[in-house]
Image (tube, rainbow, N blue to C red):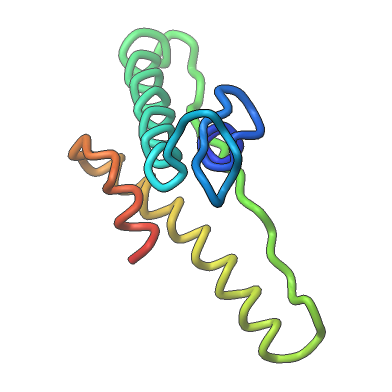
Length: 120
């Protein structure tokens, strides 16, 4: 949500976007949401690594991540709309899963990788 509303539509701080996604003073809606998502995932990975190395054994804690994405339902109760809703859900879920799994297996530190796997 931070990447989308802060860097795509610009309705949340830091209010960065570009036309036609929004009407902000500065920003690039085609690029900055991916960079923001990239940095948020790197921050989570760094915090996870620190916790695992310094605290997990002593505290016995578990680590997870919460992903937010929209739920898509059919507009009408017809096969074409049900298929479209299922395709939209599958796309966003697969995009997030592929991204997280890639980071887990070895991240190449290229923000645009997020865009490439989500639009493939």
